[in-house]
Image (cartoon, rainbow, N blue to C red; front, side, top):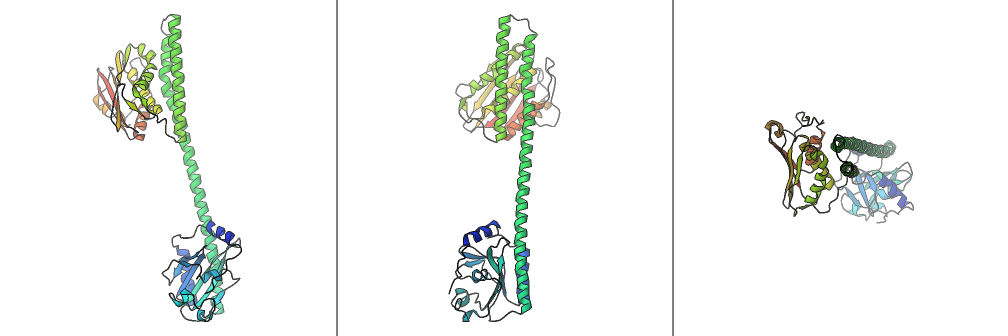
Amino acid sequence: MIPAIVPDDEHDRLKELYEYDILDSEPEDDFDEIVKMASGICNAPISLVTLVDSDRQWFKAKVGLEATETDRKSSFCAHAMLDCDLFVIPDTTRDARFYDNPLVTGDPVIRFYVGVPLVLPKGGRIGALCVIDTIPRQLTEQQQEVLRVLGKQVVKLMELRKKNNELKIASNLEREHRIEMQRISDMQSRMMSILAHDMRGPIGALKGLLDMDLPQETFKGMATSQVNVTLNLLDNIVEWGQLEQAGTAGDQQKYRLKELVQEILEGFSVSAALKNILLVNKVEDTIQVTIDQHALRFLLRNLITNAVKFTRVGSISVHAEATSEQLKVSVKDTGIGMEPEMAEHLFEGRRKTSRKGTNNEAGSGLGLSLIKEFIDKNKGSIVAESEQGKGTTVAFTLHLS
């Protein structure tokens, strides 16, 4: 057996073949129909669309043969692809290159072979369309011409397949780009909504200070404190938005929950004082968590904002329970409360839940929807229990990292 020579442009030939991303692909009707046609017109039991890889020949389409590939050394098509026209072996047993070839001495017992080279537009010779018989024979001129035409058709199909795949990839990239741009646009809109919602409380507190008759030093101290709280709030929201837009997780370092809650409560000191509300941190010193601080701040600020809004006088307290798997945080107030039915469906989004506060504070209902979105994203849960005239308790549960 004399294997086909390896062409000088082997590296470029293989590179061009691989660009078509066709090796080991699933059967396709268009290619299958060509080998059926070649087999029928040439009256041959076997027909193949063969692609010659670095060390094997693989059959993109086949009729009359079970194998999907054979080694390159025994490949007839590796010879055929180097020819300028048809590569014809009338009787393999009389050809010095093939008489002892395992495909001749064993299955499929090749006696007659004819192959037309598959030449890509750039010149790469990548395989052959062939017909095979188990008896020595010849093809008529008409059969040979049809085989040439079918060989060109195989190349055209490969070109069409490649262009279709490129279009699909381009379409997918365009769709992914549109989705990403929409995600960014939605995030920007959400950021503006969050800013508008979270800034209402601090600005309202500053406005309340202006209405109070306070000594200058007291006013200056309280105003400065509230401005610092507001700036910190802006920094936190912007940082959270950047994390969300980048699709990365927030700070995962362990921290004491009590300290975070205290920091948040201090941000409400002015608005609570204006309504004679006592803010109480009931979180145990021992509780440490790794939940994203920005998300947790956002949740607590919104819940405490609502508690201040609907409490005339009394107290608001924050409680927490932690296990190795989850954290439960509760915000309790002694406010005006709500009907049990409203509390039951507060976070379901079925009805409008925005109400005026005890000092006629405006509300958009945005906070509740954002809270629910955060909870769902973290696969947690949130419930509200309330009694009119006595207050409300909202508790949410999050999984710990």
